[in-house]
Length: 377
Figure (cartoon, helix red, strand yellow):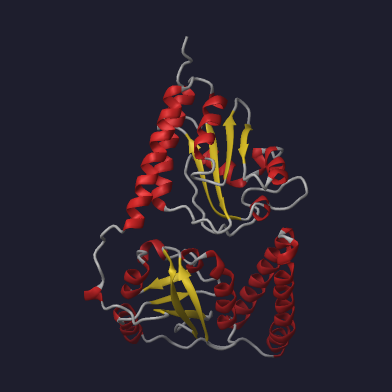
């Protein structure tokens, strides 16, 4: 039964990857050879792995499950946590199951935050697809792999990731053990890990955020209030370019959301028309923000349809080459959602950080107050 379940999960993973390849048809023509290579790789995987596996399951019965020694399992868990090398245990989709103490110090990500999230979300965009593909291959039993990646928080520092398959006791699925090490130096010991002293880059980013908040406050106080569409248009002008490549504003009316503002890069005029013509009700992220009143901060969005599709049927996130986004409801607590502001960053631009999301959350409350304030006479 365990082998049957594992085959079903592998088949489901294959179906999801095929769906991603279908969505990737909208990428520029120069990138299509890469998509074609990936499609050929998946077809080869079906012919060489899935079909023989299916034949084997059809001719043999279910295998038994070995008993688990609890004491030995606890010992192995303790060794995993205390080993002085950054180690992560992920599944075939790179979702983190465990992160040891050394890995939390090395990546700067708390274990509680990382658990349940894809490890690829903490990597640079250029490394994400390769890491996912290698992890899937290791989980399929195709041998250990090693590749160089870059952490999102330190994109200039190369990190060597070594992947090996691991079958936890009593579990039907194969996991992947990931060991992280600097590509050009040894892992620093815990005693030598520097304290949280802000770097020049962090200080500069903080100053830029304060300048942005100041510019937003000035724009809201110097213009008319009580006109939701006008307030959002001024706010979008402040955010566009300096903070986000795309700014999309939707106002909540009596019956439904209406799109009022779309600001895009100068070379994305056609894509901007498609976004402007889109019904906000067809954007799952916008609808969820309007209903739940909570901010969404997906880095390297997993679902290409999270922001819906344009009139040609292509996913907007793929057409706009979105690498990270912020979807912020405009509301004061307590109170209804008055609109939704969505910000895109695309290409090689750095992904939105938690600090930027927090600053945007503060500005969204100021925006909501300006939208709901009575008009001046």
